[in-house]
Length: 255
Image (cartoon, rainbow, N blue to C red):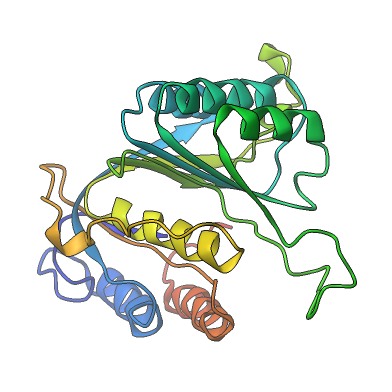
């Protein structure tokens, strides 16, 4: 996901320095083949112990829908908080859908999956470990982390559902990663990515979210582009966008 302040095309802002203009133009050359740059968003960066409380609060406030996609879903204190949150909303009549990766979710006891399904949570396991299936590929995994609530707020980033990401001071293992909370038109793109994977993996079809172009802009007016690699042909574009950004750097590259 790439973001820039304001709503103008990356390479056309008059207040950018020449170096920044060169950098954004290089990224745009490849990234525009993926999702459009969406204007009018609000973005909050979440660190350390901010992420899970924010996500759980959003789920608890859901009125219509919750879609959650994750790679690692552990059977620990953090993971079970999400199990309980999804069950509570499903029992309240909210449309709740979960995609978890078969490898990343290996530590989630099937008892909890059954509990969620019994409560009305619709669950899809991404690429189950089944070598007899046609075109089975053990390395084909789903590393996305997406949460969209009521098509109004979304979370994405690098944090899985595991105590690994809880600070040591809070009893976790202290792994460091970053997540983002987003509001605005770009939320529709993340919701559509989830829906495409859901249907491709055998989930029941459901209406597509309202298109991003019809969403109102927010005062924060942050421009965001979602970059995903669901389709194999997009992986090269993502790689080239990274390389273009690195090659265009003039002062520093932080990885």
